[in-house]
Length: 75
Image 1: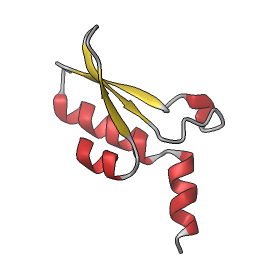
Image 2: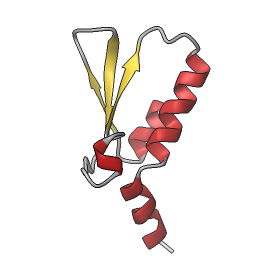
Image 3: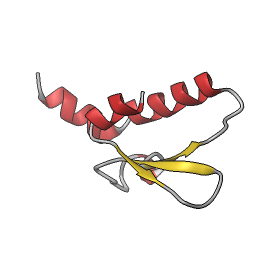
Image 4: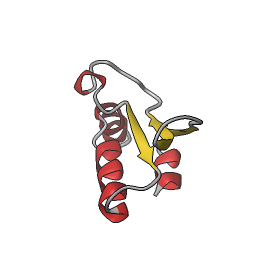
């Protein structure tokens, strides 16, 4: 799942501190994209439900306004 998002331009940054082992970062980091709400997401080491957690990360990433604008320009 992470490799799919990396292919779409998202970056995985490994963290050394805290409960999250990584941070998923949008390449656009645009404040207009839902006020920057999903421009970065923590990747937890031990989520309660790993499948749901992965689906939530994927859905949030795929709903990026800039990604959707770029995809619609390819037509």
